[in-house]
Image (cartoon, rainbow, N blue to C red; front, side):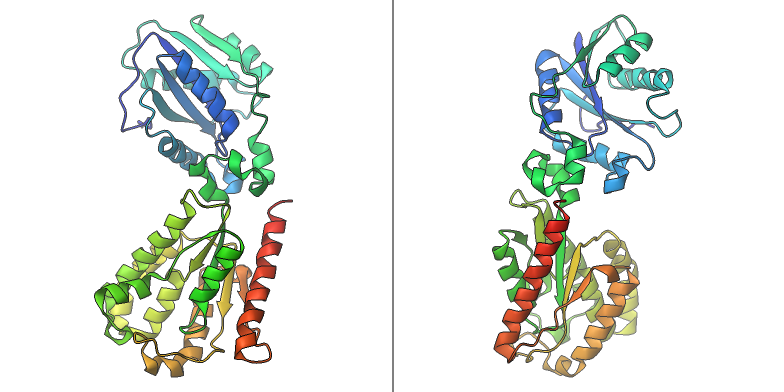
Length: 372
């Protein structure tokens, strides 16, 4: 199957550079080598290698995802071709060099216009690679050992402590290491205010509740919503949350004001059975793509406020909603991430502060765990 970069032409020219690695994740040290190769050659083939259950997969970066991320990261480098090399069926390193180089040569041919004689330079970071590759590659392949101390950072260091090395991680790959925190609960519990205050406390990005923006833009009240509207909520909230994760302002932690599970709980309670069933596949598809490090759930312990959009009849079913939401969160196996913000304080005003303080403490604990 052709896996090379589909949106670029194959390479031409006499001098071709080759850079390979696991790129789990791509970082500044890699970029130093890749850019050197680009400056010294007419074109460069960048090959991400790996196998099932490799070290990248251990941090939810399997081989295909790394390939996709690399294509995204270098989408404006017209003289760079990106491909992948699946090592699953060959002996594990340090064995299997003969099989590995055979696949490498096939990948190189796949990414060139024709097969006339060229000069190739492979940029490697380990002395052993020079020794082994020299045994199996043709004479027109030069292997050059790179000084990795120019930018002294490794993927291993990053995987162990991504937040401490945040600025070393390529922005496309940062989404994989972002701490994602969802704030959920029934209407009128102070979710949106808490999201903003937590985000500003930690200088973090945050999403807003898409359903509220949608209702305001379309002048629709809660009791007028139908399946079509909820479908908009599902995709709209997913995109709003994802936008903050990939934002250049992402500093390693992102807060979300509701998500698709919150929307599903509302749909289950307040839509007709037919409308709800129509959305089942879409709910499953999107929710299974989500992942959270913390889910703060605020129970209905505050006064229900009429803001002009909320259906005031829903006030009586707030605990039904809360219970439904908790069931859905557990249904999708997020129960281990739940933190219940049920702090009441001395009165309702103090309760808001106590819940904020509780949340801040939990976030600090999460960040401390992430910097071990």
